[in-house]
Image 1: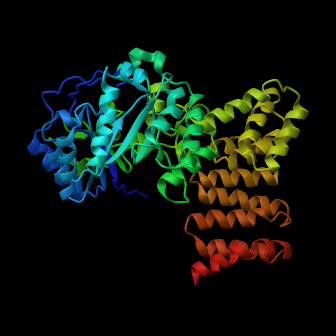
Image 2 (image 1 turned 180 degrees about the vertical axis):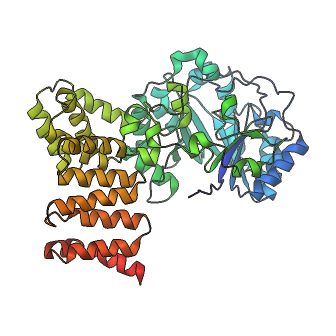
Image 3 (image 1 turned 90 degrees about the vertical axis):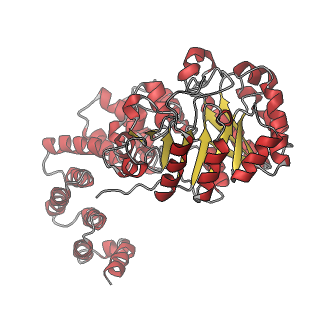
Length: 511
């Protein structure tokens, strides 16, 4: 089944020209390039972006205010029903520019602030900090929403609390935190790059700042994931009770437009291999709707990733988080994401189990974690146990279950296959193998193994009836799913009671 991707938001790098030479600039912006879109081409693109349904678009650079027609582009977006935002270094912001932004319908002007005065000016340019403080006041006085974006690095991490105190009285609308990654100029200033452990420090600060209120605290897509404080912070920023993180949106609902009209999924991922086309040659609608574009992210699966991400409980949802973090730090978009709070927690657990080499202790701990549904820790312990004794059937059996619960279906399939090679009449292994291959798309073959698990025990093992019904339901075979439940319910009153809710749901679907 093909998936239709609908664009929602994006970043448009309208120029490479910039009046600063920031030490962490990922694009190494300096001067405008000869092939940048003309005003006419830019305005046509604004119309085309509206046609495919964009809701928000952020103008960036370089420094967007160094391009004379920045507000003309913003107004054209606004006239097309697309809400324009802008990211600026603040150097040129004055009363005139604030009024132009207001007139063009710019919703939010986000200013980059990367520390207190000494730190910020070291990273960007002497005098920049003072200009930003004035720029904030000018924007607020002109009724323009003003936000702050901070690129976190080793120098400014400790300054965040003081920055909060400074900003809390300035009428700031929002404050976003993102990671400074070693690309562009930052690759030449690698000593500034934050370490993976600093992610938790930023999340902790963001959570505390969120509780204080006054400023909408925002964590960029590269800052996460599945940390309870991060979850609560994102919920508050989203004005909802839902945690909406489902992985990198590049090419799925996010678009990046480079200064010359090149189209990428994300402006941070700009290597030639990730350029999907150019709007001077191909209309943006054709590029977006082409099933052969953005495949690096649209077609990504958990199995393509490496390390902890490949076995992560959230892998099928998160797909390794920020694609640019994986690309920059691992050299491939299919690498693991070490700048992930959940990844850090898993690694800490692995270190705690490092010195356990007793099989009985490993298994007893694994069984304890399995009973409490902590499958990630269970997997760590069982992996170590299997490295010691790869033929232990008790370990293999529990690992098969654990891998399945972590949605590591290839691992679950392999382990259960190994158990079946030892004993083809193992009902539990038949069930596990059947479930695994069914989830991998071999539905009918999977059901045959579930049926074998039932037959081996002469219908005394009823779990496969329920599992069979679930697999059939997931594949739209509702009547067959109901029949599977009814067969099990005819055998056991206990099964009848335990399957009642699902049974009634299936009947409602068929009604």
